Length: 201
Image (cartoon, rainbow, N blue to C red):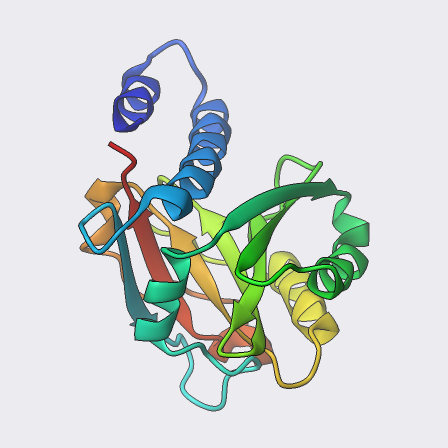
């Protein structure tokens, strides 16, 4: 519920890092619920932000309109937890066991993945789709060299022919003004970026 996020943000008794982690957890809980309840109303909004570096992206980007529609129509979104070091293996396993019309949200045991907070695995137009989700409440979210290395390694584990993108999951007050975020100078710098926001009430 948006009121819970507002309450966390206004609390003076929590450290900023703790606020961020708690809000991110709420975002992912909302995301799972929103995909089950969203229709063509304003509860879910997706926009294409662009690339930090022009050129061929390391993953073919999904069609924005088809992705927007797909995110509203999952029959189920299951959550799987794993260690950061095992994420690539679990990612491929999630794809192999995916049911028609469903999605799997992969979340790490570690509290800070830096480059992204989770991976949504599903099928889009009969192609495997991997959305690297970064939930944030900050005005900007650049990706450091170390985090970019990890994102690059994860994209390297994605099967050929897959589509995917880096998606920033945002509160309402960040969504409209969100711009392309800086990514450290690696080949993944040209990955397509999207912004996502949703309500469940």
